[in-house]
Image 1 (tube, rainbow, N blue to C red):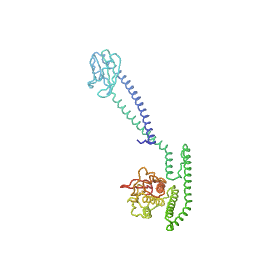
Image 2: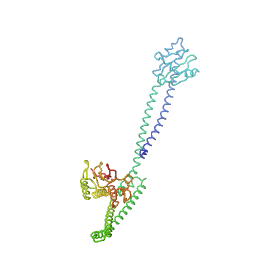
Image 3: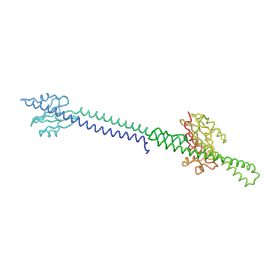
Image 4: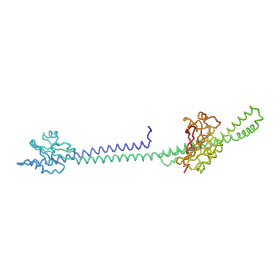
Length: 451
């Protein structure tokens, strides 16, 4: 499974931590509030039961007491219901039928010892508190107190605390997201700078004054980029200088080879063959030097401008004696792109030359769009490129399996490397896939080149 990102994990940790803390506080608050309210309600019910029991005792001390009238005389409101157990008989208000069934047997046994007692029960599915007060050896007063309002209070309290816990968890997640966003901002700046450097922009730097705690990181990163840029520039200059120095002797050799080539008919067969081989190798050497010079220049970012890519592709086909009908422009793609003419011309020339040399000839040159990116696709009729070679084929001086499976040739091994380098200079990339029906499809994507 794919591991979650740092921002997601930190945000989740903040949310879970806030939820656990809020839930713990909510549970503690709920339990303390619940116990406090229940204890207060029990004390209130016990005081009220003692007062009502005194009234009932006074009413029973008359000569001919009317038990029902005595119970009716009690000011119990709607939350308390009086019940009297006298001489083995149960008495209650006529408006409260079935109240006597709410008196649990355990409570009757507990109050039989002459001590007051209380017990929480459920009457008709509703919570209630029964208080028992002994009046005499034959009389016991019971009072059933409804706890419905108290239970509703608990429900509202639980809902409120749950809502608060969820809101705190959401606030924790927002805080975690905010903290990681600002905490990872320096890393984002490093990543952006690294992407620019990878695309060939060695002017990208970090601002050391952004965060005092990251001054050392910024300074070390900038120093590393300075050294890397200096080393790359030194290597580029070395390759360019060597290539330029080789041009003069190569031109001399090429001139001498051309003289030998013109006089081949005056030479014996063995000497003529050797002269032809020398001329071919000198020509190949010249192309290698030219490619090295182009490769040394290709590390710089592309200088974009308006270019008619369709005309450029047709010119590239004409240079190789290929029909212009190979070029196809997609209906949704404009003919003018914002690219560097020299680089795109070399991309097209190298891909077409690669198709002619190794792919049995190009089948089509397609110009299309992918969002704001221009896409160049060159298809051929060759044997294709195996999956394991599709990355290596764009490396410099690839002369192994990746080249030989494409056929025999006298290339320099830098053509496709230059294609990849020019694509990277446009912040794009080059790739190769299979062509439907056989062959290879080379695809170059150039971001931000289309309106």
